[in-house]
Length: 258
Ligand code: CAA
Image (tube, rainbow, N blue to C red; front, side, top):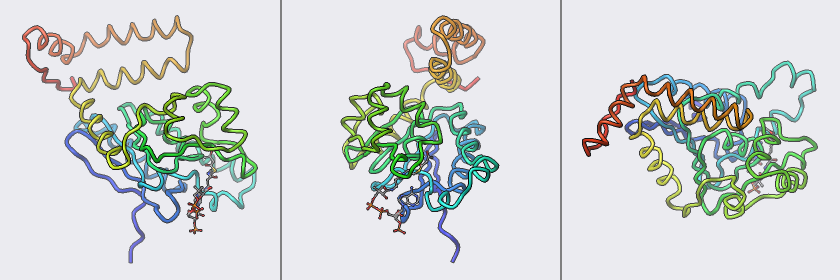
């Protein structure tokens, strides 16, 4: 029998939906799994029919981390040579919006993958953490940086140095996730949000994502200048003309991603 697929994908209108699918290992992220995730997201990023994406796992686990079994025997040189987290960076470079629909465990690399997404809809059952400290290591796929930017130094130190988990409510309070939804509807809510985004100007979605992300990379003054250039740039698109014309004509815009 063929191996079970590591990811399951479907498209729903202009939305791509990707499910991590290693249920027996709580979606532990092996090199093959993250490679497939990055390849699929890249493909949708290039696909003119896809405007927004959703990543989810199972109800029990979004992902319980990078694959410990795979990493356990490796030496420093092996880790350095194969630079296994380089492929993870591709997720953060996707231009179109990605919504993470998170239930159960989002730990270590699972939390890091989630933080590379743009919006997080959490089930009330979700638990978040960077428990690498229990293994004698630290987060390696951006956790110390993105977690700290999301929740601030005090909570980041508390969570990363103790290995403790945050509940969905705590994660919402700290700004790690965007919304908490009931356990039976978190995925529907994420897909609904993706469809809401997909009705907007597709170019503006991508440019808006780029502008917000710039806030984490630059000073306020430079960020505002960057935003302004992107804002003016959008006036060269048909979607801007259509969006403003539709407003004045009191009808819904018909965006064409041009
Ligand atoms: N890697 C590999 N396998 C994992 C895994 C991981 N990160 N997390 C869970 N699994 C496997 C378990 O080994 C177990 O497999 P078997 O049935 O073959 O024994 C299966 O998934 C189910 O797990 P548990 O029996 O442990 O389930 P539980 O409900 O008792 O506990 C848990 C759940 C608290 C999430 C526990 O599995 C756990 O602590 N997992 C590890 C969490 C972790 O340390 N994550 C960080 C990994 S390092 C990392 O991510 C580095 C980075 O920055 C990228």
